[in-house]
Length: 128
Image (cartoon, rainbow, N blue to C red; front, top):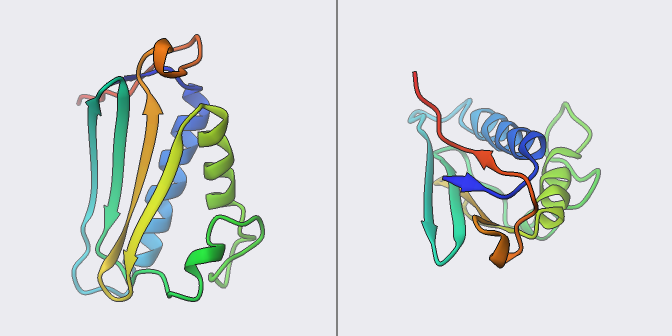
């Protein structure tokens, strides 16, 4: 998938979401992190899912706010920066979570300039 988005911001967004997922699964008996990317109608959809503890219902409305955290370590800027960077790249981020069953973040970004993409491309493919 080729995204018309800032490559450094996309890397940091993915890193933040993956690190959060790993933290959430620390005490989970089943540890599964999945990343799925598809394109449709000029938009790229990236899902980052984990089988962690999920996010408590009372925390959901605040999870993207700066300095809001449920962790013992950290200052609560990771998700708020992700939210800001995705908006700067004409995208959006949504979250689905169920306490005890994990969380999925969905990022939607333009894959064409016509859909609001910026002038640089990010190649999201990776091979080993």
